[in-house]
Image (cartoon, rainbow, N blue to C red; front, side, top):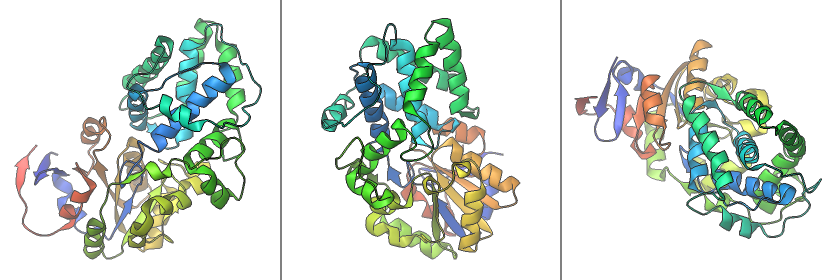
Length: 369
């Protein structure tokens, strides 16, 4: 079954065209789909890694665009919906290659009062020193080698364990994981606590968790986010689907509403699900959340709009559970196109604001792909 172009920037699987026009509700992923997260989540990944490597191990590192590239590749493996998982892999990979005679200098992180200096270290083109680049390169290469396969954190940690044992750094890696703590919730361990304080900021920690930051008191990354979808697009979509618009995302509700601001009014937030606020067993690509979201919206046929491999897998698993669901991929990830075509996404769009064209019943311009 082939794809055809529905005008510039829109590709639809030929067999899905008419079915998509019968969709009753549209459910959105957030990051990379309707919110540009490269200056928030990706930057928080790097800043968290930079602080931990410096404060606990004395490694003065610069983390550049090569890390962003590795993070984009991890997003296309299906098991990295949570950025805590990406961040721990960046730290482990760097310490694996840059470790040498490095030992843990501190038992605790303490207060970090110079967050902006770490942010500056993560706004560079290339990571350094060379040993750090080697660690990032190793992670990027392993992600590339497994492109098209479902991979999760434990799969990568098995590879790290194997490499660490060969070069005598297995104890160093074990010590690091113990220092980072469980990746379960804010407050469960060092990484999760520091990460959320960097991403959400002092206001977010107070409002979301009712807590005072343990390590970092600053403004957070949310103000760096850029909205990708327009109010006009959302209003058009609300006119095209009878059951409305929902959200099913890996982030929490507080930060979602904060980022979307006035645009949040276009979504049925009470029918939406935010897996960062739910048990980890409901993380994408587990389909229970999208099935529940469709049920709350009262829709039997839904389209899910996302940018990463876990989003496509989520829809596939939901179909296996009986939901009539379609996947529309937004091509904001540079590694998405080939995989989405190979796995037969129902539609692909260059820009989320082209989405109404898929559901309109007007004239179409076809060209084979």
